[in-house]
Image (cartoon, rainbow, N blue to C red; front, side):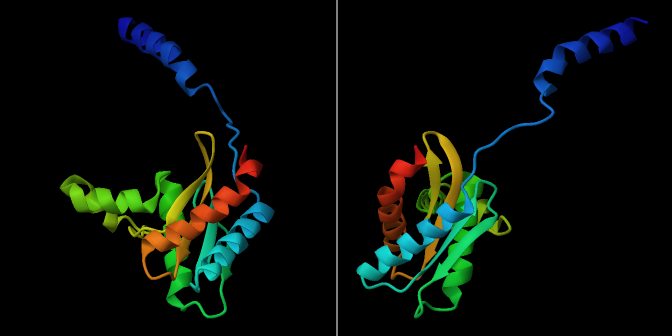
Length: 161
């Protein structure tokens, strides 16, 4: 009897922690994702780089993919994986790459299925809320991929407020 009463009491105390049956989460819309991908490819083209830009929702699901006509075929998978990695981790992939290089405990992140631990992926945020991510592949360095994505995000920032 004491065990049953104790279990019931603990269940009632824990119930508020599991009370939400549904949650509402903000995420990027497809039209915005397409515009962001196009703006990113244009930003890179202005710097002379032929790239692919991929935009995902907050869960890492692909919403938009834009490939410059002369971007290499490998850039499609690279951009998609960078966006997935950034959305999943809620962090820039350049920061993940740095952590992997500097921290042996983080090195296992390169083994996570679908992750690409190279610079070029940025989370898309509204305040502290991650709405999705953008990944870019094709510039001669991940830092340049990331710079193109940041230019596009800066240009559309007002719409993320």
